[in-house]
Length: 385
Image 1: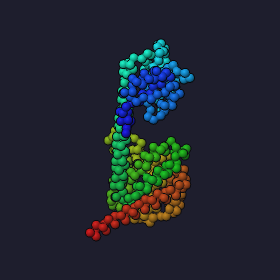
Image 2: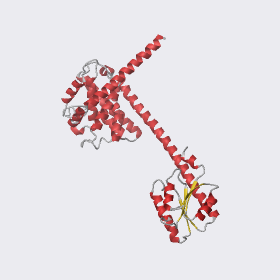
Image 3: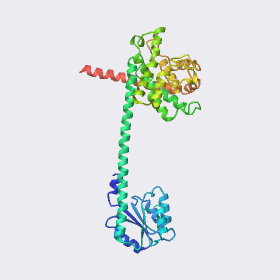
Image 4: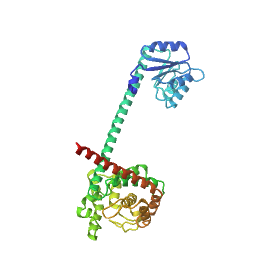
């Protein structure tokens, strides 16, 4: 049952007074419309207010021994569990400063004694209607928040699916395996998390940015859709002219992301990372990479992470022009690229967590085999009918 439904039953009024006649009078006046709770002193009132179900309204006497109504109200408002319960003071203290004191402490109303039953009933009803309205508004807000959260999740899922579809489209034209994009995005995330506390990278590698890097990494080779099949699928080493054309996949990738930013009329961190990765993941630390021969820190951090992920996966994967190297062989080859191909600090951390890369590779390689076996099993089932 939601909060409003619970409050739509008979609401609860707590009467706090040390005089039995006053309690009897107020209880008799209100019990036909509301559930009644009783407290005969301030300390007891604080205890009862904490019990479930909590009162919806407190009628609080001011002049009580040990703890007066003002102090009781002060403590109620100081406790997060009781702070929102409206308090109406009932007292014979009728001076303006007394009423001012009560309202300043957080009371919603101040009724003088001797009480007028119609006045008490009307003011109690007014405050409880406000309580009911507040619960209704809270329920509506929770419902709206739930709808927004659900739609946000669905939109994020659709965006992720679109990104993977775009990346997979580029992969289908290449000789690389379909899970290359999944492996590389997990490599990038693992490496980024391992570097998160490094003084050179801490400001860039926040939790939010690592999530965005994970999502943008699959787009690193989308520019390959613009490379002719004769070059992209060539079963051998490219000649110099062909390699110049192949280099253009970084430019095509960046232009794709720029076109998205232009269409949106703005950019964001996700698109920034996607643009950096697609354009600069083939740059090398010593300036011998492409397309701009960037050197050192001029290469975006995102692209430096992607360079390590991409090269490692290329080394451990079979290609038409090379066999797959073992994990150990691949690590040895990458170690030789320290401070030439790769940022030395990033490579050092990569070497420390290389086993994580190996586990990611095994995880998604097994996934590929399972998916392939599932395809053959389904095909066999269909052809047998």
